[in-house]
Every structure is written in structure tokens, then in C-alpha cells.
Image (cartoon, rainbow, N blue to C red):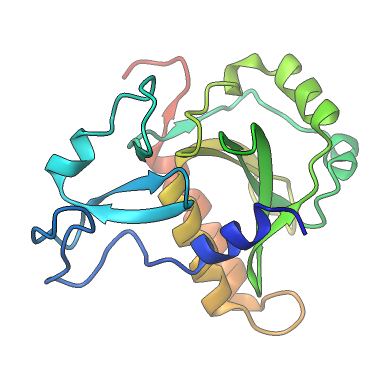
Length: 211
């Protein structure tokens, strides 16, 4: 079994970005607000809820630290396209997947949502590298903490490419797992996917555009 697969399943079942009032920082135990920030434990691959003070300790992405703060960056890449042939060659059986660079494994990991949570795809690295060469503007992910969401056109849904914080991705996967019914997920899942993609697209700024 690929070593990152159980990690993805564990993170997919992690708590959402918002937690009940009364939660405490998982580093210093100070109370944290309902809406708070996260850091990733690089060694244990754990997503941790933290206070603002602890979060700021790990925002230097160039430092060699055990923890990394999850950035609050949302970008949309309107000119990025992935052909159906390229997608099929990546061996991803559904039309939506996240891609992030796992610094422990030293490579890009692809995973997609389903009834069991996050399912990893064995990503052919040469084919993924070819996509990055054609679209170098998307090769800007912060290791372990940011992911590319690529959605292919399906059932009339809007396709596109977004850069999202990794905690938003796992919250999405966990929610899909909760809503999944039957063979293809059911109406609620497809509605939620549409709503999530629309909300993230509206929140994102165009890559390379004004801040």
C-alpha cells in the first residue's frame, strides 16, 4: 500500500475548519474561536487546530520546521486546461481531484473524494510534469499546505483549476464522505460539489491579477 494512502484517509476524516466554541489550541491549549487556523504536522501528517499566536510561529515556509502553517490563499487559473486524454492518462477515475506536494515523499500526490473519504491515485509523474511544463503558472504550491483542485466538465458542471488551502480540501472530502449515498454519491453530493466549487471560485482571485 502506498505510504500516503492511510494518511489521506485519516486527514479526510479530520475535524472541519470550524469547531464548536470551547475548543482549545492543540499546541498551547489556549481557547480558540469557532473560526480559526491550522498547521500541518509534517512528520505525522496531522492537521492541527491552533490559535493565532501558534499559527504565526510556523508561517516561514523556507524554514526547516516540523510544522507548517496553512496559508489563506485562494487562486483561480482561468487559462489552465487539462484535456480529457491527459486526465485519463493520469488514471483518475472521477472528474475531480486535488494535487499537492508531499515533502516527506518528495513528490506530488493526487487524491479524489469518494464514499471512503480520500482515495489516492497512482499519479504518473512524467505526465503530471508535462502538464506543469505546459502550465508553469500552477507550479507554485506551498509544500504540504496548498493543493490544486482540478475539475473536469461533467454533467454540465463548470470545469476549472483552483489553488486552495489544504484544510479546505480535507473539509470538502470529509463532507462528501458524510453525504455519499449509493453508487455515484447521490443528488446531495453532486449539489454540494457544485456549491463548493462555486463558493471557492467566488472567493479566489485570478492568478497574476491585482490583489
